Length: 91
Image (cartoon, rainbow, N blue to C red; front, side):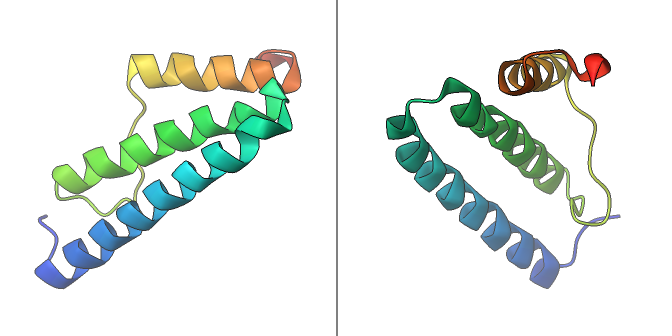
């Protein structure tokens, strides 16, 4: 079911705000010098891309999150391992 115009506008605004927060996180986290901490940016990028994709498909990403692409799944696994030092299955 297609989103109504008001909800689509609300979700578009939310996606823009998330993008701004991600940009600020990158600027603020890079000087920290901790690659594990900076890897959270990869997780945010994947989440943001999923939200954008859902919105383009006229789906409400708040009510139902979409599936990860194969590439996104690999990025999430790599970021998780970078952050925690072991694969998700090792936790």
